[in-house]
Length: 170
Image 1 (cartoon, rainbow, N blue to C red):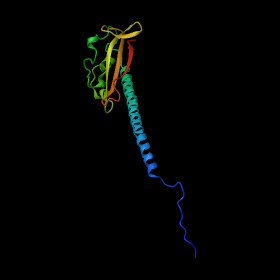
Image 2: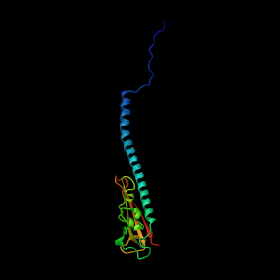
Image 3: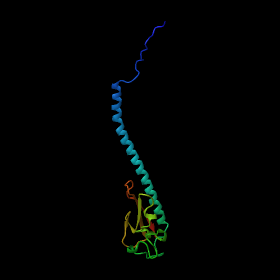
């Protein structure tokens, strides 16, 4: 009859308790920084997307404003600074009634002020004058108006994204 032999396990198979403890310690030290890094990347990605959306909403409103004529009056003298904003017969709650750029000043139409959930935007319009190489707001009537569109997001991912342009009377 044959002899019964006992097979020995091959050397190097399996983990010892010390090796398991080392693996757990190394993973315990590596995982928190990785998770922090991934969270930071996710936040930055969301912020970048929010800023891009805010810039898009600002550009869309700016283009709409610039498509209107310079002033309610078609020739100089232009509307007085104190009278900029919606004119008689125009409703600040209905942007479709606007016919010139300064009508958007003080606009409360939600199609303007709330382009998407969490976003708010507004426009300011002032007369402007060139002082050296810098445009300055002007209290007096000029042939130039500065339009500023501001977009922000209520959760702080996009705060006060501003788009500014100068339009001329002619």
